[in-house]
Image 1 (tube, rainbow, N blue to C red):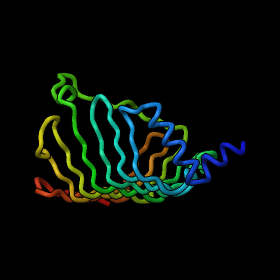
Image 2: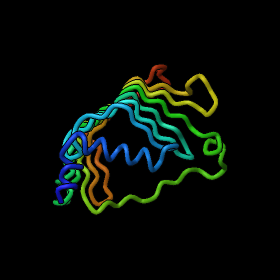
Image 3: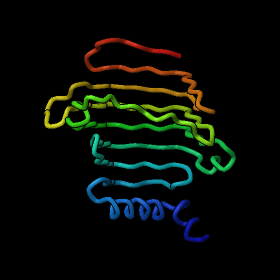
Image 4: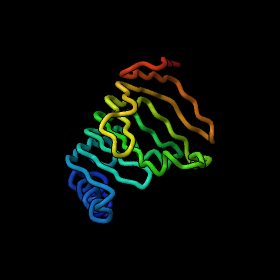
Length: 168
């Protein structure tokens, strides 16, 4: 019990969990800077995730959440901010004949998202030096409850506007 408390409530516990993930998946997961605690605020820098479909590099991500509220049926994310994101798509996925189909998502709890912001997102095709799309800023807030997605606010700003969309 003391070990779980240490892992969740201390910065060194969070660092240990992330170091373990890096050791278990050295080719798939890397993180540089770590600040915060698993139970409330987390700030990660130089995050890298490598999956078969894509690679993701994030300069910084900050998360303010209340994971303990999940025991009451609500996963509450007050705020998430991510900066300087590179998304590199794998050519095999992009050229596949079958479209990507996402599974139905019915969580056993409600998800509340107070505010999410991403800034400076570049999307690359594999082996290409120039991004195929650049998102300067995107923000959203909403909730997911019993399979119903409610978006309270959403906005996107592209580097080269191909279209504009904003909603509330």
